[in-house]
Amino acid sequence: MDDGPYARLRRRERRIDEHLRELAEMGELSKLPGEGAPLVDDDPTAGDRWAARHIAKNANVAPEFVELRREIADRRNRLVRRLRAHREWLEDRSALLRDLPAERILDAARATTDFDGRVESELRSAIGEINAL
Image (cartoon, rainbow, N blue to C red):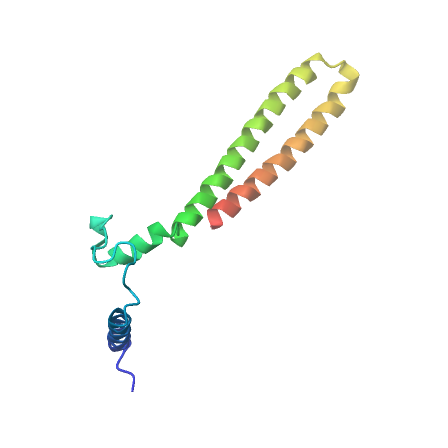
């Protein structure tokens, strides 16, 4: 008989409470660190979720959205570094083009434009991947 998720949860809680009582009666929970002390409420804003947050915090577990935020920040930082490096390269390349002999300027300018286009395409693709996360 399925009474719904809340009824199942209450039954599960009762089984857990019963099991903990049995363990306590057998002395299995004696002399554990923090025995008898209340759990520290390290996040008073957590409400009913305080125990889950306490366990997650102590186990160094982060929610999926936090991991995703870190991944996005890491990718963004790499992208910004790549863009800055490319801008520096373009500045250096512009200086080189100014000093080239006339017969070499056209080929060098085409190569610069082609490479710049490939990098721009890579950067746009990377931005699209970040936005899709």
